[in-house]
Length: 112
Length: 477
Image (cartoon, rainbow over all chains, first blue to last red; front, top):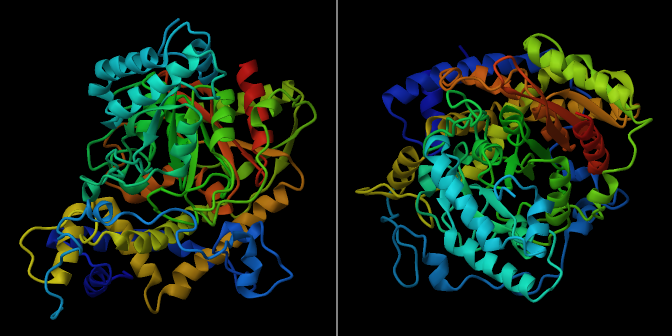
């Protein structure tokens, strides 16, 4: 078993999930079964293989340039409301579970 | 003329030539939905007001004798992970049960600009995570071909609606096979375009390096028409590619004679159902008789695709789904005292079991001490899987495979075994990882009359070739 009950509790906390006792039990079983399957990746020697994070690295990129300049194709002028107008206050708050006329409202944040 | 069995072209022409009206087409589809969807459950929300307003606009244009745009009056359904201004968008999740987006997804805006009439929003697996549509927070979709079976997933509602004539076409999304596998299970056409071909602005993100938007249609030509409408650079999505959009429809009728079509033995191994194998082998023979040259190719890293996919997709999902915090637009638990309690309980109540499982797996794979062993390792294998295709496409113009190892399975058959469910995507995930386009088209039926899908994969941005092969096969079948 790779994942222990303690790991499940720790990862749930990182992920901001509470999980019931029952959910923790099934999570322990499922994560172990999936990770055991995933282990077959270790059959492959990848010591000289670069990681691939994005497909878009494959087009539009100017390989002659360095750093973010390589992705110049994706950039645009930085002008206020350049692509679309900001949402009106009222619309931005319309889906909030709790808000006053100006702000989203949440429980007190002093203590975690 | 049966108003609910029309293709895109036939529907538009009928409106243009005033044999019917866009309003009548929309009404006929709503009547069909009223009659059929109680059992199938393909729609989550109907947008009747918006649909009729758009249909009336199209009818006024037709009455004025103007030339109508390519999708004028064509009724369409939109997968519920795509934002629609003023129309509830849940992503199949209870956590977004009341969410009304303040803006439109670019793909939807482009469809409407071309005259399409949005009937409503399609049921799907929660946040597009699933292969059977059983993970929807609003109940499963049933396969219209056999109501005891799943329609596939995650775009199950999108595929079922096209199969049951409840929309002329629909939009779906594909992260690991979610357009092609349900298309295969329901006997319709499903196209996943190249990564970056279609803007994802307004798509509720699952795994950003893998998510694609594409059409589910009744014919290959319809898929070409819809792709032409939604493809192209969008300044609102930096991953949308600045690559010219060809006329996919004009390319359809080019001959396929002499095209080199690859067959990879890795896609015909253990786990492939015999009836599916026979149908796909017969399809390959058919392509040969049409003049294609069949070439054996090897994609040696294929057995590693599922583990790679489930590490990368869950890692990205765990980050993307962190935004559902109960503050700005998602469900908030009642009676909470502190901020962190609010986060945890809201997410606990709002997310379903599979979504929690994937958030947990992804968080684990990204956590300190495991990042290199899992996430980074998977990214490296992703490079190897992509190189397999690069190598193969030096020898061939397209690759054909089964879309799924089996025809549609029964509801409940795999829902208690996540790993068995993940393996339903075994032939589709690699194309998502590599970013290449793929299409699933019907290629026969099992003895029990369940549809079987043929998958055709192509080079980056070479949709014209896979559409052409698919079209030739469809015309010959």
